[in-house]
Amino acid sequence: MNDKEKTYQAIREGIITNRIQPGERLNEKDLMDAYDIGRTPLREIFLQLREEGLIEIIPKVGTHVTRVEIQEIRNVIEVRRWMEQLVGRLAAERITAEQLSELNGIIDAVDRLALDDRAEVDDLNRYDVRFHNILYQATNNQILQEMLPRLTSKMARFWYYIGFQAAEFLDHFDDLRGLLSALEKHDATGVQRALDNHLDHFVTKVKQQIL
Image 1: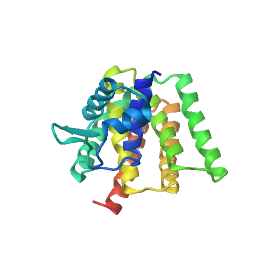
Image 2 (image 1 turned 180 degrees about the vertical axis):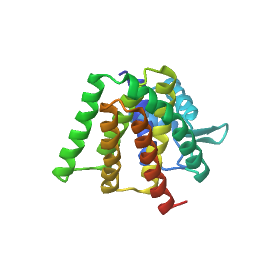
Image 3 (image 1 turned 90 degrees about the horizontal axis):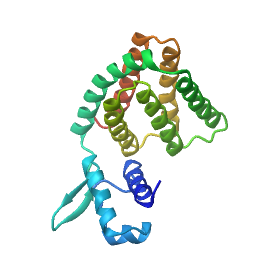
Image 4 (image 1 turned 135 degrees about the horizontal axis):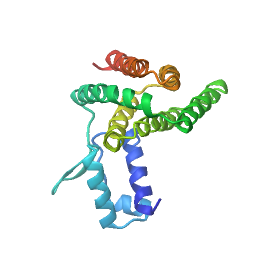
């Protein structure tokens, strides 16, 4: 990973985890100094983040982190629900033994964190992202692999924005255990049902907080 990619990942993670607040201005000079990066690559990073809907660039005004809007949450949920039904069918058919082993490893790692009472939201989010990325890779469909991580990143941003705690994130992994069980059986209907239930639980928690 080169310096530009590292800077992109750092700023992106800062926005998703709410360490860089919605509406906050991104100062080019401060970021250039902080990450020892030039103006041109930084502006290229800004264009990437704007494409993902994480920042807005307004000429003569500046660059700001986008705000989290309720309608955006609704839109993401609608699109993700529809797309993950296709993911469920394809992944159930195409997932490999190696990918199943990786998914089991993620669940085991989360269980160890929970057992030792060391579960932190940032760690759980990284495991969640990794789990879903492997699931999307299992579809063997490049378009889905490119589109869905952007949706999962937006969902993660909602988690942080709403202020969900580690205990609530651990509940989220209970859903993933059921999903993994269906994947191991190559049960497309079971995988689709598990993905739908998983999203329903997220929607319920969001409604309890802000909707």
